[in-house]
Amino acid sequence: MSSGSVKQDPLETSDRGAALVMVMAVGMVLSMLMAILVVVSVNGARQASKDADWNAALAAAYAGVDEYQSRLSADTSYYRFGNSAAPFSKESGSVLVAPSGSNANPAFGIGVTGTWGAVNGSGGRAQFRYEVDNSTYATSGRIRVRSTGKVGDVTRTVTADLKQQGFIDFLYFTDYEVQDPDIVGKPDKGCYKDPDTRTVLKYAWETRTASDCNEITFASRDVITGPVHSNDTIRTCGTRFEGTVTTANTKSPITVNGSGCAETKFTLAGYPTRSDGVIGMPATNSELKKETRSDLEDSDVPRPGCLYTGPTQFTFAANGTVTIKSPFTKMTRIGNAAASVGSAPDECGKITDLQSPAGATIPVPENNVLYVQNVPAVSGDVNYWAPSATPAKFSCTSTASNKGRRGWTFDGVGYPVADEVAADPTPYACRAGDAFVSGRFKGAATVSAENYVFVVGDITYVDAKEDILGLVGNNAVWVFNPLDSSKKPLLGKNRTINAAILSVAHTFQVQNYSQGGRRGDLTVLGAIAQKYRGPVGTTSGGSINNGYVKAYTYDERFKFKAPPKFLNPVTTTYGVTTWVESAAAFLANGAAR
Image 1: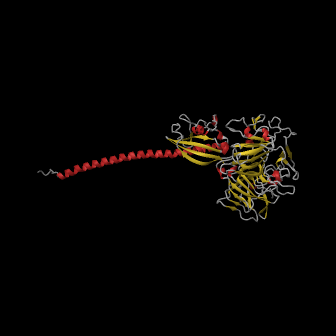
Image 2: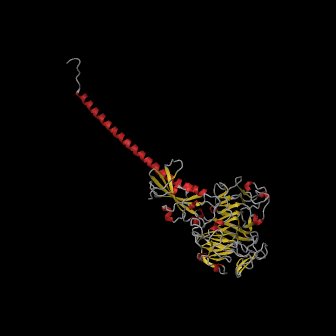
Image 3: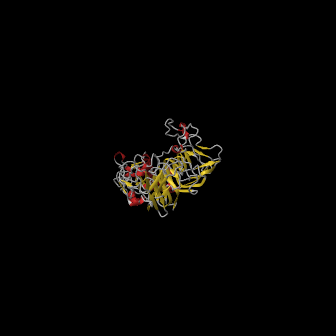
């Protein structure tokens, strides 16, 4: 064998072959693993994208509700707009008007060719459309919105109930914590923004310079069981507040407890506190009178209420009826703004019965308004009476004196009773639009008066879970408390009122609150809103010596619903009371499911 030749070991050749096979096998496994990893990564990315779209579609649906809320806040009448052909709106029987031109809303689109609104900042990728159910707005103040969000090929739907934030969000709402200047007289010029003319009061936190502006204080025995708000500075004297307490007061302290008073109790942590600003009162309750017109579109007044003229008595009965005496009434609905035409449907009471001493007994108009107007002074009005004319069997005495007998009767029966003297401090007016209200109430209605509402007896619900009543006075709402010539009370002690109460331009107050001794408890289940604080009694040493002790409890239903067509603040926002997700209403291509 030559020195240059090498003999190869057979085992070494065998090992090299085996190694090659192993390398190829490992390579194949690695390739398979890489392929699996690629597939998993791609599928994972796809799933992650799908999950992102799923979550984003729900966010887009919520954004739709928020966008609709912003439109309502900018225009409180926006509840009238929508697409009546949308499935959700059509099923509910909602009456809607489609906004057009520059006011067109793409979110009202339906169907495959219909439009969608875009979520701001999404570049158009996230979209929404919503459908409106306003079928119960007039009766409960509630609007239901079904909003569908879309991202990619994913859609999700939420339904939200919205309610205006208004006076009935509070058990006790007051614009000014002072007595009504029209009742007690105007205070010193230092109480006013315009000291020379004395027409616009200052809030206490705007620095009223007078020492006494007729402020009213919550008394030591008052227990307020519910939310309270005042645009003014709240004054207390050992009072107990068992709910939220807010004020528009921008100065400190935000509430004032009187000198020598026990400590005021605020049972909820964090209260009292400041609100975002002043909640504005409407100028009048004329919007409710409009609800008795029969000539307006369904989108404005879908079901007209009933109109009565001059002093009108409402006595409710537990069987769901009301007996109405209204001697000046000739027509119970008007057909135009000038009231030159009108009608008298039986559902509001036959005119011959309304003008009789027995009155007209009718079912309580369901979810509607009973409005009492002043006797018109314009001869072209269908309810006009000449100044010298009076209804048959009607007798009325009106005087500004606190001694003369006054009031009105039919054939010797009416309000006030024959031997009653005037209630201090307000005279009755023979032709004023005053409502005299009492009884066991069953149903859903709002009684409103162009002048005063007098609560002449207890007003209680037959079913406190179902029945709901509003009392709205353009001027004061009075708790009837007549005295005889010796200033002794003519009515028994205690008074109960189940209702949402609103005095638009004046006050909620007890007549003769400073006379006649202690009258017991004034029990209110509902809500009270007023421009000026009205006294219900007087105190001595922290205890009531005349009038009533407050026993006010908030009607929790007012968080979700309102009495029919109840008034709201001048500016308001809509809050969501409930949310629920449902099956998607639309596919990604726009077709309804």
